[in-house]
Length: 208
Image (cartoon, rainbow, N blue to C red; front, side, top):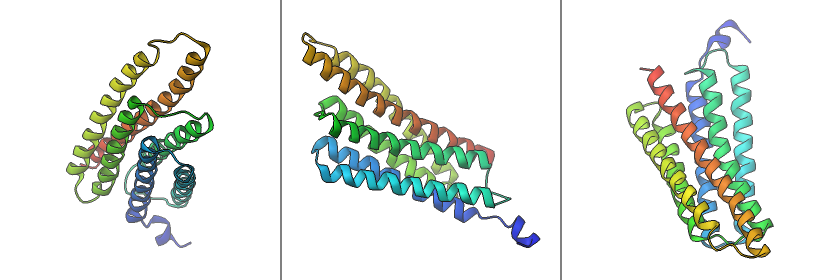
């Protein structure tokens, strides 16, 4: 590698990889939304494939980071945003996997939370797409994602209250424990969306 190659920036490559990750994560969360509305083994398999593809995109991005001296914005922010986006689909995958494994029937609270997660994943995807040419628009999408995360947390707390109402039998307790674990995964997915939104805003602010 020559000196010129060492200092060559690859802004399009990193932004494209982040956009690809955000698109794959959106695909995964939309599959989660499909599952909670109409569970099927085919959706479980599709989400598993999407999660593996998302992992591969992150591996490629990390490899690019390791091989590139100069990056379009802070390498810590690139790494952190990539990780947060990947965590969103990881928790979506875990949620579906455990619902299928434990034979959990999604209730109305789960459906409502997942709808907000899908909307937030859309906003994160749009924010990443706008990072390069329209950073102000990227921040607006990031703010919307954060607002949706706040709504998820409100629904999550109310869902826990609803969950423990009317528990009388051992079967009720077992059902509650399974559903509480699923709700926790969904809340974690929302938290990672909030982290991604914060990092997007940080990247824009640092670049202005």
